[in-house]
Length: 155
Image (cartoon, rainbow, N blue to C red; front, side, top):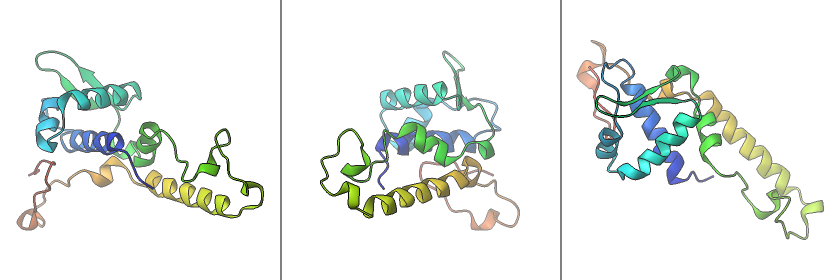
């Protein structure tokens, strides 16, 4: 299974927002664009979709930005992947409308691949943004902190 760049960037936006969930100032598109070296205009389109899905709250203008509308623990990766991907047809015969497979009526491969896709999504449903966001450093982990490129160091 291959995720599109759109989904990858959507997850990065949400992870970044989760990392700054408690910050007074909202996260900005420019901030994420710079941290990940991604086009600001491309991120703007992704942020619009995430806002339409009810995951992000956005405010325009000076002092504006975005915040998560739900707690990171309430946003599953599976939900985001389903909402941002266009389809999960691993092979041609998955599409009922566009399949030209001559053996689809007697093929067991389709069922196996459908089960694999369901399992893949089930694993992603178990993972939330809270699982992916950087952990605030405690006195125990402070000495072992390692920077993660594209995500802020939290203290």
